[in-house]
Length: 406
Image 1 (cartoon, rainbow, N blue to C red):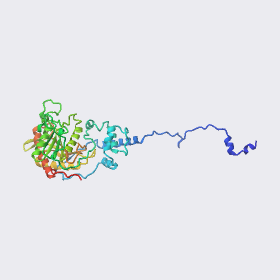
Image 2 (image 1 turned 180 degrees about the vertical axis):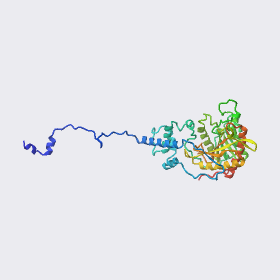
Image 3 (image 1 turned 90 degrees about the horizontal axis):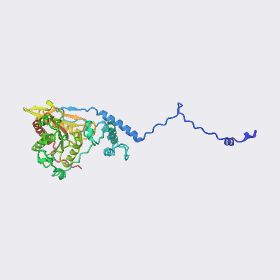
């Protein structure tokens, strides 16, 4: 019996009957079993982060800031300062085309996963989720007072001006009944090399004195009573002042007032592409103000007042807003010299939205009068506006052919 314990310990250990091993949960420092955390995919973390960035963007732009700039201010523009969103996107150095491709895919995470990560696309998709609106559908976006939320399109490179516009002949010769002048052509060109391009986003805007009583809205398709007629008068007066001009009379309100900026964006792009000699682009509007606020008495005659609207890069990138501001300041001063008192307010209003002014330099939105003005008052106003535009164009040397890109 005593020899039994003389067996080596190793052999004795092996001979012991096996006991069932009990698996007890590993305990943490505080004596509680660890909880298995919910694993979130990296793409979901990026999506949540983009939601936060989008919320910050919309929080920063929730209150539209409209700053009136006095016409008598010193000539110049504010110091070039990019918005914080521009600085983030520039730091990320991402391709802007990624945003468009992601919008086509529809939902973040569906389809091909982008590499590297496109922050612009993340912010865009997060904004859609946050506000419940597809940014590719400007009908819904314009309802939120955020017109023109399209990816910024670079201006076409300057090229030697051709003798005739490169627009396709079939589209250039389209006719719409009722349009004023040139046999009702949709694209009305005055001069061999247009310098000023005019289009009307709200093409059916009209005026109460010209409409039948009890009309529900100040809109009509009788083009001789709309802002299109006012734009044609402006084109004629510019041509008489020695400035070539082309007016697009495309009905940008064919799908309604909310979709008008979507259609006018492509209208303006076609205008710039088909007529590369254009150096000034004007989106002509009828203002929304009413009463005496939009009417002035100049030389004993009632005239519709004029307001220049300049979109900034407050909400979305706009590489041309400084040039647009400088051109607007020169135009407002010229208006005061031509017809003192014709500008509404202090002449220039800067807004955080772009209003398609990211397409090129010298791109402005101009409001002439309001719904209570008559066509006669509009006619007097655009005559003075044409004189001021012609003076600024000649002063800045914009009639000279653009320098070809190297």
